[in-house]
Length: 81
Figure (tube, helix red, strand yellow):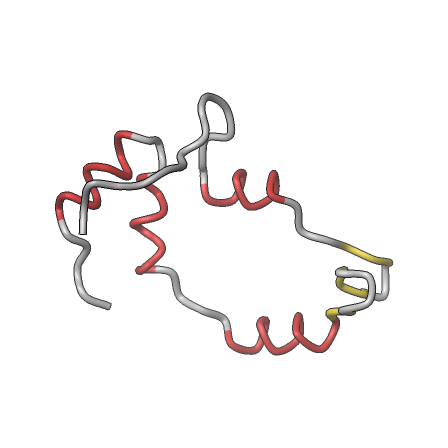
């Protein structure tokens, strides 16, 4: 992936999402993704594992990515391309 524009990185840092810019360096485990796809049940929106059902919440994503979940939401129009 191309390097992030410095302005975008600055904005992500200001709103507490700087770890999102680092996702481009994330190595994808294709075997894991394939296994998760096979275990996904669309009817219940859960993964079915031998130990039981599992789902991923927004809190789980926030914890894994180190995103802030407190404060004001980041919404609305932007002034940047």
